[in-house]
Amino acid sequence: MSTQSVVIDLPEDLYNIYKQQASQKQRTVEAEIVEAVAKVAPMLVSDKLPAELEELVAQLVFLDNAGLRRIAQSKANRRETARIEALHFKRQDTGLDESERKELGDLMKKFDRWFVLRNEALGLLIKREQDVTGSVPKTNG
Image 1 (cartoon, helix red, strand yellow):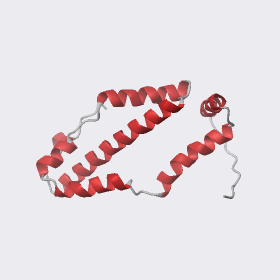
Image 2: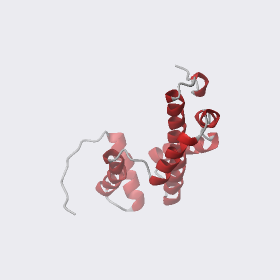
Image 3: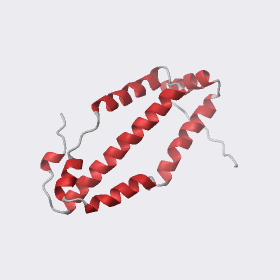
Image 4: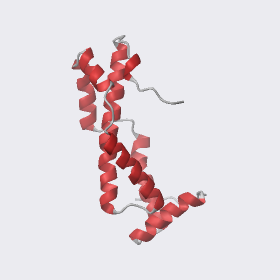
């Protein structure tokens, strides 16, 4: 694969995150940044959902309004979202080891699955001209 050189200016705090991760893994800062970009790039190129999730979304149309409402009103697992937040903070502060990176990836995959299904269910209820007023939690702001 051919490569292209790019020069970017990173804020110091962001650079220090990659520098610390690189040091922990005995890699270069460049290798850490390339890995991070490579992880995000497929999401930027494709709006397509993973096949398993796409299949689940396709099955939502067969649910009645009560089933869709249960999904639309579901809440993310508090323990898991707290763990995601803790891992994000740790990643910024000291970096994550391999098992923590895997755990964060697994938790994010579960969260993304919940988020997509919940929002697709809301969209279907709206298309069916159902009142979704109580389906979306209120925020302070």
